[in-house]
Length: 197
Image (cartoon, rainbow, N blue to C red; front, side):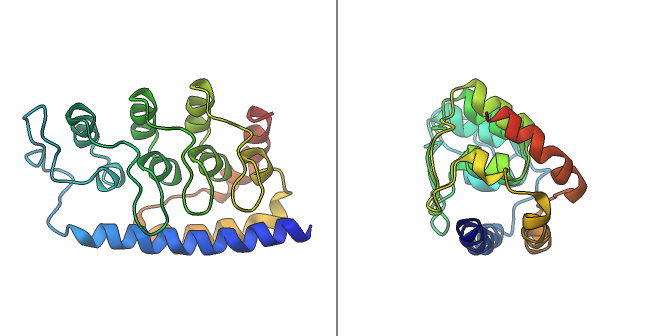
């Protein structure tokens, strides 16, 4: 139990770090508009001006595909929390972006600064379609984060013991576009745990 609370405390620190990272990223390019398609450079070998993490957060599938075509580093970590584009997609439930990155052979098992992989994050936030896609492509279920937890262990604690963490995540990251249905998470955690067996 002591280890669980240590894990949960550190998860709070990670969440706050992620909040700052994505807030910083959102402020870096104030001129971006999600409806503008003119930002995508049509030349096959030229990366678009919008960075990959911002494209994911903005649901710009066209920009993500251009990054892939131009040979951009699909595993480039953002500097503060060390999230890869795939982890960013998992956190924010960007299923289409995650599947595109998985199919483009982004590294499934890279870890962020917290030691969590995309599978850890997708599992914890109950992004079932992303968990399925990661498992189908061979994501390693045995990897442990910096707190010693596998993806399965991150969803195995009783919900009432972690409900406060989900509520904090929801409140802290809502301004960044993160949407979490707490009832859905409570009901889905056992399903995700079964997927990870």
